[in-house]
Image (cartoon, rainbow over all chains, first blue to last red):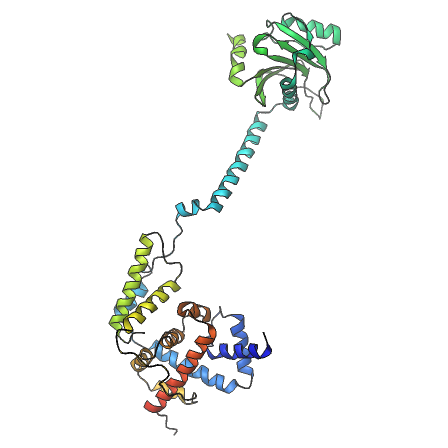
Length: 260
Length: 142
């Protein structure tokens, strides 16, 4: 834009300068008014402002019909643009945000729920569940006996003390067993049983990092991973986990047997 | 705008009725300026049925320093009649400008014109009104 055009624009704006100063006046208009007041045309501009002020004063004195005045006094006359909830909720952006928040909230709630259910050694148990998902029977040494009889084997052969099978699972016939060291869990005994091709794991309990103590629990606690569920019990510093492909309810009948 | 209060009242009622209908259809007026735009077009439609002013026929005179005193002597109805007799779109431009309720941006939105056009219309309106003042209410210096 040339200097001539800018001057012309300012002059044009000044000719429709607001009669009274308003707070929301555009910057261009403010500049035009300043230039008009200080420039060579200050006197004509002052006359223009006086003229406009006098006319506006007269306009305000034009009598308004009482009925019309009453209309304008009534705030409900002009319906406001109300954004209805239904419309807001159906907005794609709002839907996307709501969905994202719901997913994040769901994940967060699941994590909190998992954390509340967690117990010392839950991470180890989950890790061993992942071992259960990938174990093939050929990896284990074939051994057909009652699961309860393996405690002596683990102690005699591998010096693993208190690796006892809980009475609920002691009568189950075994297919094979092995003892191995995992990267994170050492001294793990794995037993494969005939019953529903369940797998038992025995592994050292998680020690308290502060004082090295171990808090046993005789009730059954559960972990889940990739369609597998493990029921864990901890006695004498050793965790026992019965793992089954399925859900908690699939393990429940075996756990209730003891109570009966 | 129409030179007739009852016609203006009718146009305004029609605008409010249209707004209510739009709201009922769940398509309420987008902003308050819609009311003024709609009412303006209705007023123009109403006034087109009567006698029309011929554009460019009025005499023009530069604004006089005595204009405020001349205007003071006028009756408000005289001014209303003078504005309502102006041709469109000058009539709407003068009416909105001297109401002193709208910003420049709002006036341009209601009148659907550019700043330069509005400036020219108001400027010529001033000079025409001054000529009319000089003819009807001459100012005698004491």
